[in-house]
Every structure is written in C-alpha cells, then in structure tokens.
Length: 299
Image 1 (spheres, rainbow, N blue to C red):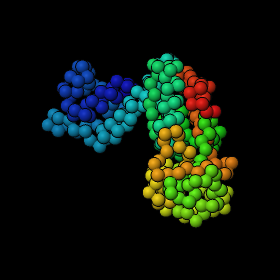
Image 2 (cartoon, rainbow, N blue to C red; image 1 turned 135 degrees about the vertical axis):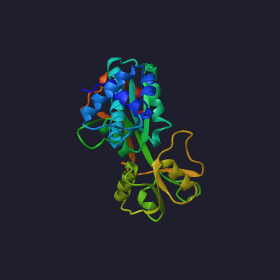
Image 3 (cartoon, one colour; image 1 turned 90 degrees about the vertical axis):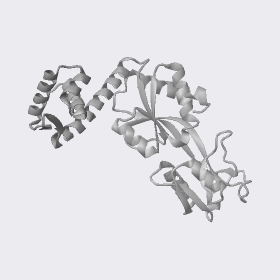
Image 4 (cartoon, rainbow, N blue to C red; image 1 turned 180 degrees about the vertical axis):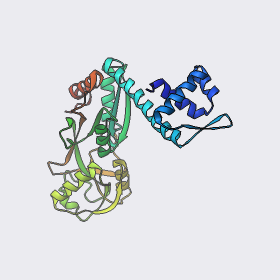
C-alpha cells in the first residue's frame, strides 16, 4: 500500500524527472526512491514514466496520477489545518465569506469584534455574491458567511445581525430628490439601473417593484451596488439601494426613503447546521451573534 510520503515523493520525481535530483531534494537514498516508484507502479497497474536513455519522462499515466496526487496532498494539508483548528480554539483558522456590499462596514466590525476576543486566530476571507457564498458554504470551502436573508433549506443555520433600510437613489437635481419618503409606484416612468440576476439584491428589487405594481424599464445591469450609485449620479437612471452609511453617500445622489414597510434587507451570519464546527468556529459564531450589537449598535 502506497504511503503518503511515497505519494509526495512521486510528485517531486514527476517534477524533476530525474532520480538523483529527486532523491537529493527529498534527502532519501536513491535505491529507496526507486523501490517506492516500483511499488507505486505495481499498485497503479501501469508504468508512470517512460525510460529513455536512462532518463525519466512522465507519461500519460503519470500525468493522470500527478494531477490526483497533488489534489490529494493538498486536501491532506487542509485536513491538518482543520484538525489544528479543532484542537486549539485560540490558534485556529476560520474561513469567512462575505458580500461585496458589506466589505467596508459590517465585515470589519465583525473582524474587530472577534479579534478582540481571539487575537491568535487567523481569518481567511472570501468575497462574493450571495448565491456563490452559499455554494461555498455547502461545499465546505468556507466555515461561516455574512450574507443577506435567511437561506433556503434546513441545512443552513441563520442568525440575523442587521436590518438595512432601502431607498430610491435619484440624481441630486431630480424632481423626487427633496421628498421625505416615496411610494415606489411614483417612479414607474423612470429608467432603472439594477443588479444582474441571480444576485440576491436583484430579486429583492424585483419583489419591491412587483409590490408597487410597476415593471421597471432597465437601462443597465451591474454586479455591484456602488456601480449603481455612480450611474445614478451620472443620470443614467434611478436605483433601489441600501441607505448609505454616514459619510458614504455618493456625491450627486439623493437617497429617498421608500414608504413600503418591507423595503429593507436583513444581513446575518450563516453556517452549516449539519457540519461539526469545532471550538474555533463555534467561538466565532458566539462572539458575532452575542456581542456584535455592542460594536455596531444594530440588532
């Protein structure tokens, strides 16, 4: 049976295609490396190298094994890291995914709140849109995620952290700019700039427009809320966006609150309900869900 070390030796041998160089790099005797290669070839049922003038050339069978060997060894490295995380709650690694639209406020708040409690823990970050984030979570590529709306399915747990009010962004000199509040139906004749499908905020925009009884004329579809605000400032159209954070408003844009009581989005923490989290991830979830309100002033 091939050992993990022998599989790692094969990778080095495949990269060098030279028995002596590989043995020197691995600090093993050349006869030992040769025997390990013969055992591996017997186990695979095929030669992995072509022997040409006493030189090694990786053949197609070897290329196939090299691809899977690298992948398998990388998975083992990940497993070691996750086991270390499991065993040492003060010095593990957390893989966190988050939305583009909360990169400058909620995500830093979460990281600061956790770092104050567990400064030795490493956080690996992944940024994306909601449907991609949930795919990463279900596939085990991330441990926890900051995203919008309770996810579908019983496999994911959800803890709401913040309710973000939505508004209609219009050019600063637009006739609607001075309003205290607006019914979305009043913008039926306006061109809209929106996010692309299947981004979750686009679905929320469509739902609000449907409730108002309008079918907006789409002037442009983007992938980021910040782009929508910039296009509104350029008078390309109007857009439904979150109310800006203090000091974060786009110049040349007026943000008019929407009258619809459902004009908000929830942002929360999501993790896999059926997957054992370990003490590091469990501590992160506890810090964020129990203590974040003291940092952000939200609930």
